[in-house]
Image (cartoon, rainbow, N blue to C red; front, top):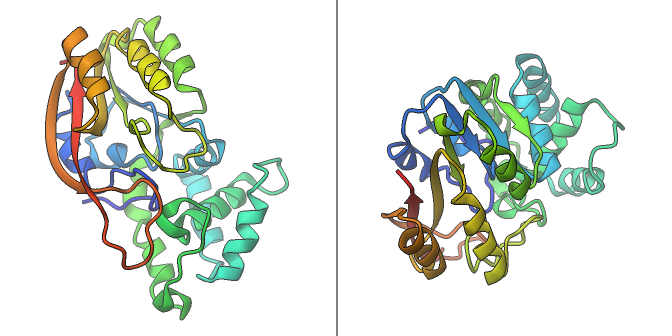
Length: 271
């Protein structure tokens, strides 16, 4: 299993290698809700790989990881910081207003990455206490252990678009038929504090009605109890629903030692 960039609410690090088995070998891959790019890290290389994410901080981080020069500087910068609450508070504050060219972009990307790595569940809200890391054990090794795997992000194209804008553009794209659209969207009924969420029944309904217009292969992730997607995608538009298995819920916050709830992960595919 490849390394993940960092923990992240709803991240697919554990599930990605299995999802890749269901992906057709098309030359063009688009990750509509990029997050930590876990499926891109897990899948074989494609001719064109496009990472889309509405959170600009994540786009900055992925843009730096996608180029050898900035990736090297990014690693050098993040290794300057010890695992401690003081650094987390400082860097969380520095990234709270977004990037405004106050520093080199790779330095800002390191701040974003650090707040992901040391926050609870990767949500960048609350510090995650870790006695071993705070004593200086393994934090730098943990980061350096990602260096080889993250080279696989070299050359990806990074977009910072709203999903509806992206879908509208792709509907008109003549290369759409050669594309897999991987859509790990915020799950129906989630209680995660995403910066950009899809919350209401109406929003999810509109989202489903837009993505069925895509001309390429589509994979949508969700939980088995999502009857809305069953109704629109399966019954109305002929998608297949595949039940993957029980996995820990990674959306929302968990206290240290708290037992994670399990839900049955599924995918809806049109191929």
